[in-house]
Length: 174
Length: 286
Image (cartoon, rainbow over all chains, first blue to last red; front, side):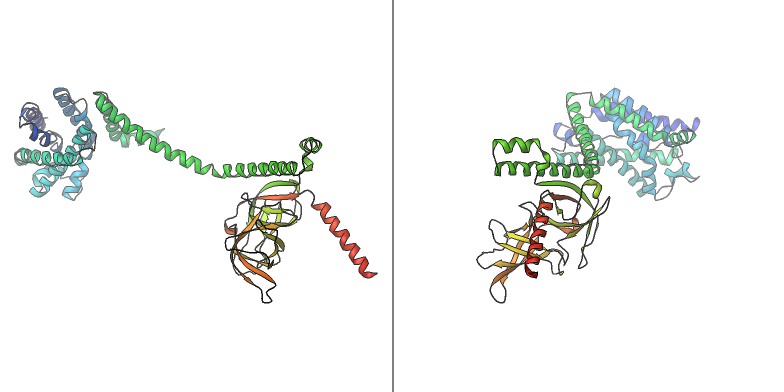
């Protein structure tokens, strides 16, 4: 139980930062339309690799449900975070180019190269943001603006997430 | 049962994911009228797409049955049409009532059949049809397609099957006539192409044209059965007649459903011709 306390702190921290800080930053109407940083997928990305998929899925559901309730998402957070939870192992496999079934998986994040780690976080955030903004607009009428929103928001989220990722992987999983 | 449980145990994470996603989609879809309208239209479009595909597949598998039904329907309609033609050609109050009452008076009867096997690569090709004596098929009945294109005529019949000599047989003989004219000719197949036949002895008064249709001219066939269309024509060496090359109207290699045509007066005509032969031979001996 003790070893999971950092993960609980991580989940709480990213959820609270998202609810009380990132969703309340006023960047002006023209920028807010294009840039909406979301760092809460980290609560799923950095969960222990050795965890069974079902636990990852349930934790993701709990996190997304809280966000839906607090931010009035009406299910969109659940809808877009659960695919990330389900695909996490595959994304890890693709970015690290090796199986995560081996016995040395508990320290995987600390032993990943920086490039691999950034690719893993970046690709996952991109996938999440694509799903999120596509589901939010439900229209391809402004396709160019949709793509710009996805790319700019992903970049911004990655920049904000990176210090947390580095801190967490170097201190906690080391 | 155990296998089912094992299978569910293997995929329970995916099932849980689908369940939670469905709940979330439902919640999201019903949250605002906009999302409701958008998601409903998308699901309807996707549902409609799959429904259309399934319908198309079902339709494809029912085509054979529909085709068979249509061939029967064509046979019935041809028979009705023939009856109407006869009534119109020879209309009196008495004949009308008599012919309406008596089916046997029909000049032509049509029997639907399917090709059981056939050849087109030999000089003497034959078609085996899946209808025989027990279906009312007799020798010398004509064979046409439902589109009224000439195929051939019956030369042999067994209980369940019949053999037709198609136009693609070097021994095939039948008369023809140029459409919209009264000029007759003889049909011959030289054996060089399964898509072409030749017509010979066309009067020099006739004015054949490329693309002109040639119809069968035979007591085995009703009027209006197309043999093919003129592709080229020329005078014979003595310039006493035209000969022409026809592109066959029917593609013999793709033959499936056909109609067998019975001329109900054929027996009478045949005995008449036999009597003429006997008379002429007896006159010759005298």
